[in-house]
Length: 156
Image 1 (cartoon, rainbow, N blue to C red):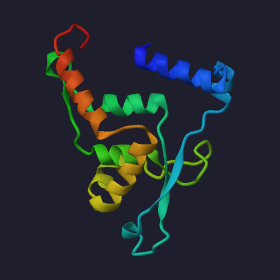
Image 2: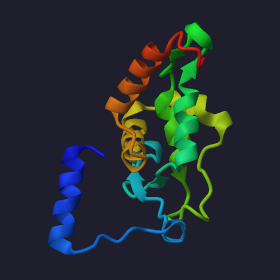
Image 3: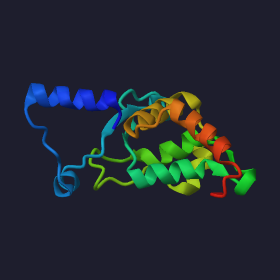
Image 4: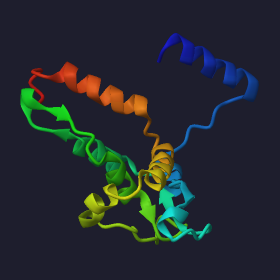
């Protein structure tokens, strides 16, 4: 742990007493996937209350999404952001507020068509999906940089 993080933790303990260290059981019982409503009236003939729910990704889903952005093998790997917005929205758009029971709005066969839709509502849904999944533009840039750094390291 860095000195800065250690100092911050020690300061919290001093202010609040002992910190509560979560158990695996507590974590697994209280994992809440965030969900947010996204209005997309552009796709509903102007109905202002039309849209869908967007959920955050799980760790596995995010890893799959990111690995799906990498094309090629070995020294010929590259980041392919083609239709990245539609891919993320298709993964995250659901038909209800409960991520455990809701169904995806789009299937994987519809990703290309989704990418051909107006970018305004697509971007709105993409930004919410990014936020709820903890995925920033800086992290995509980092993925690109890390790919450049690992070229030829024997892990491809």
